[in-house]
Length: 109
Image 1 (tube, helix red, strand yellow):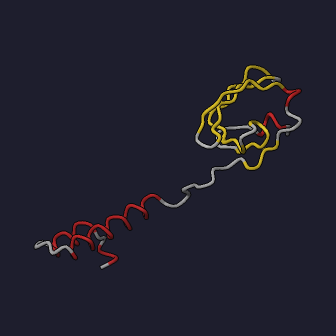
Image 2: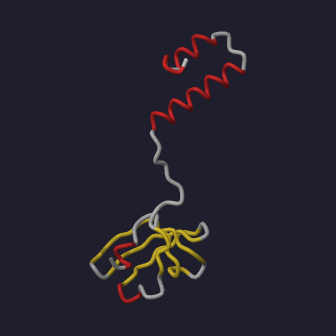
Image 3: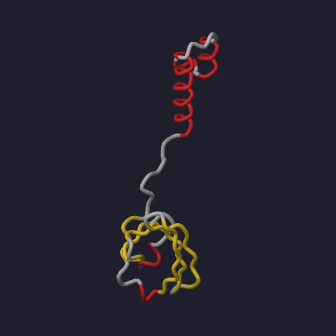
């Protein structure tokens, strides 16, 4: 796989801009030999049309996001609801048991 195929959104590319490492925002392929790149360097957004002959000094550092979320969304929701319930209990709400029963599953009680 060549460099052109490795460049996709969220990739980090060194050598695209003199200011530093570029975070690719959008890739538009015009042909097998030309791509239009929208990228961000140090908070500045720029755009560059890149041809296959210009890929020599470029280096793709990684093709993934620096931060990702691969956990189970239902567990995140449950943990958030438990945290919210505990915060409200600490705040002194009068309907504590009803609130807990509404947000906690019976298996956890």
